[in-house]
Structure formats: C-alpha cells, structure tokens
Image (cartoon, rainbow, N blue to C red; front, side):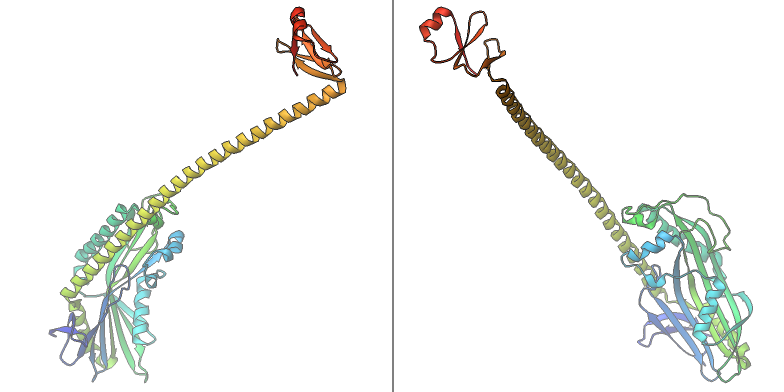
Length: 394
C-alpha cells in the first residue's frame, strides 16, 4: 500500500495529497486563474515512474457552460467580467473524457472497457451529489434575489473509468486508463438573464415542469443553460508489460487524491468573493437601470410640458395672426364696399351703422333717429340746439 504524500509545487506550496509509491517522482502545479464562474483556480498533479515509463496524472475542477437559450447566448458577451473561455457546446460525458485522455496522452485511443471510478467522490457519490445540489441551490437563491428566478432541471453526477488501447511512438502496445468525477446540471429561468440588468430586454419564457430523467443531461426541457465538467480527472499511461502493477498504483492514487484542505478553503472563499462581486455588480446595474428609467420618465414629462407650452404658444400666435388678418380683411372689405357704393359709414346713437353719401361733409342725427348729411360748413351750436340735432362721427 502506497503512502499518502504531500504534492507540492516547485516553489514548495502544498497543493494536494495522494497515495504515491517511492519509485515515482511526484509533484503538482497551481493554475491560479479563473477557469469558470465556479472554478477560481485548479491543481494538476503527477506521479512518474521513469524506469517503467508509467505516468499518472490528477487534475482538479474543470467546468463549462453551454447556453441553450439563443437570447442568453447572444447577450452573454455583454456581461461584464464574463468568462467567455468557459463557454462551450455540450458534449456527452464519455466524449468529454475521451477528448481529455487523447489530448493529455497524445495518442490515438481505442476504448475497450468501462467501469466505475473508485475515487473519493465515487466512493461517496450520494453525499457528493447532495453537496453539489446544495451548492447550486445557493446560486439559484442569489438569482432569485436579483429578480431572475432560476430552476434546476436534469442533473447528473457519476464517477467513470474507461480503459483504452494505444501504441507508443515505437509501436509497442500501451494501456491508457482515464477517469473522472463527472458532474452537470441543467437550469432554466423564468426571465432572460438580461433581467439582471434591469430588464433591458426582458424576454420572458413560460415556466413549465421539467421533462426527462437525470441520465439525460443535455437533453432536458425547458433548459436555458447547462453547467458541466469534472470535479477531478485522472489519467494513466503504461506499457502493457507493466500495466497490472501500474493499474494498482493508479487506483491507489485515484482513491486518495484531493486538493489540500487549506487550499480548498481558499477555493470556496474566492468563489464566495466572486459571487458577492457579481451580486454587487448586478445591483449596481439594476440601480442604474432604475435611475435611467426615472430620468427617462422625468425627461418625458419635461418634453410633454414643453410641447404643450409650445403648442399653446403656437396656437395663440396662429389665432392672433388669424384675428389680425380677419380684422384687416374686414377693414379692406368695408373700405372697398364703401368706395363702390359712394358712401361713408357712420354710427348713430343707437349703435347702428348708417350709410351717408361721401359728398356730405357733416352728418347729423335728429331726436327721432333720422340722419342728415350736410355739405359745406358745419352748423353752429345754437342752430343744432334749436333743431335738437347731434353730429355723428365715422
């Protein structure tokens, strides 16, 4: 039985633990950069038996997101600080493992057998699945608080081991074992993710009950997105002549491999900090959207008031111009009429208009309302008093 060893970086940082025999050269490396919204960093570890040309690898934490909602897929590029390198089309778990094994071994692989992987997660699959779902429920709770209700659909966790046959560069037969602690979850929202930004697009989808089973990850409905990947991945490459001993060493490595507890706590802390950052960012965007809406409403009110005032002023101006035009037209028409008829118009004491020949220099009205036109000089006041006449003006 191999001893559990500390796997450290070249700088001496403790990163992981695993059972490794003394004939193996072992170590680890920290990739201290965010790989996914839920993977702030990850660790790779190795154990190499140079004499037998046996190589064993262990890698922690890799996740991808597949966006099934076309609107979500289109708008995700506009999300601040989005990890676009983690966006990937969904592939089946076996294909995912095959691609990993092919890339790391640099060999043409042919699968020949599959079984369960006896990893720490694989040996505690129910508890691991419960932790996985609890973790995502906390994310869904955050989405709900931000106004984007999110619901889980299909989910899957399984630990699988696949045996491949291959050939070394010199043509000698090689066995490759690849395994992973696979995990994935589908989820859907009652509103597009753009609702996080204050509902700028607000494309709604009808909530309905999920369809399908837990073994159909990637094919459920409704589905807005899928998060999928592996908590751990493992690989062994061994010449066929040493495959039996190497397989024992590999399975002991797999059964004990895990990230150092202190580093794992940093992992969780970084995730919590990023979640809080995203919450703060979403709240700021919501506030900005709300303030923009208020500003727009205020601008619309000011514009409506300005338009109303302008409209009233324009109407008043138009009416004033019209009234002046009508008065002018009336005067012109009156003058034209008087000129044609050879009369001037006077107003009597009753407020009535009376026509008098233009040859009259003075016009008088008697006590009975009769009007007289007189040519020449005006009558003197004494005569007017005796006649009881009053002079009229135009």
